[in-house]
Length: 140
Image (cartoon, rainbow, N blue to C red):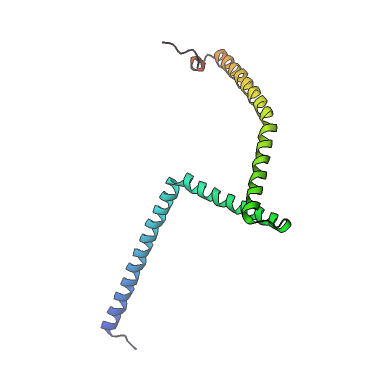
């Protein structure tokens, strides 16, 4: 059985229209994805800050609810207790670790200076100009 010519033409036209629609939708999808990618790249720090704030809120809420299972106080008071406890813990870590961090920073500074001296002498022994290591003594 043969298909009439006008019906074949209509089928071909429908196929062409479907292909054009698929190409258009695909192109729009690619452009929208590129725009979303550019938006995310440009506002990455802001989006990270928003995400961090949401995680902090979820964590504080979870700690507040866990405290609520032990102590029956209003939610606001439990949240204040959790925030004060976390602030005290952070202050304690900073106080106890501050001296150690300062000591390690001074040791790191001395190590870097001695290694720069070692590298400079190695380069001078191999005939390489090391005048770029003179950071503090800029010539007028």
